[in-house]
Length: 130
Length: 130
Image (cartoon, rainbow over all chains, first blue to last red; front, side, top):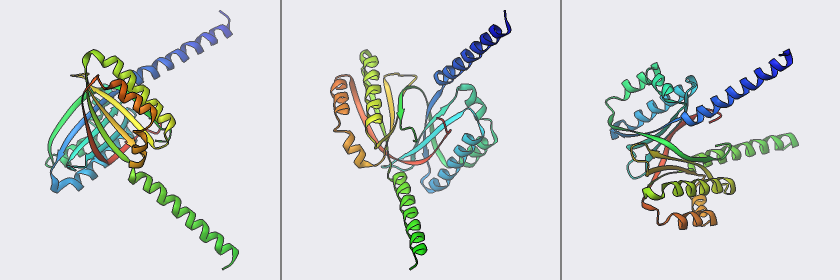
């Protein structure tokens, strides 16, 4: 095999590996919904702790992809979070990080109930800059 | 007033207006959760119709910002959609578009129940390229 042929083969293999990795990342993504009921008197403090945890995880963990937390307009103490992780391994790493442990410790007396729903992506579409 | 002072004042006013607009866009955004129960025998067709509607709305309506639809792993006929519109006016325009009407007509016999929950953003964070 000539040096050029070897180089070409190597390039093809590397490209294929990158494509496979990107595809795997997409299909392995873990989508989860967390439903949280917060004590009304602690709602402001809870929201701050939640936002702080989200920012820290997104900034420092490569496998934490997206968080969106919303509250019901009819009952603002009912919070729903859509969480996206690159894969289940990324999630397992996430729950033992110092920022996640700090969050759990801080909010433990403010959270009245927590329901975790494992889901999978059906479809998504969004504006480029959203 | 000198010409330079006038120019500076104009620049400040324009900057303030842009900032206000960005802030208003952010605070006016409409976040909604739709919970849909689909007939098991029509799930594949329903998912296709939903994905088609989402893509059309994102591509053609400036005020439709983001859709994420997920299904419960324990019951794949239970679908949750997080919808984001620039404001309530954008949503009102959306529901009279041909693609949305077509979607509603197509899925009307496949949807067993629909619950719409008006919510507001608590916090969000995501990776740049997500």
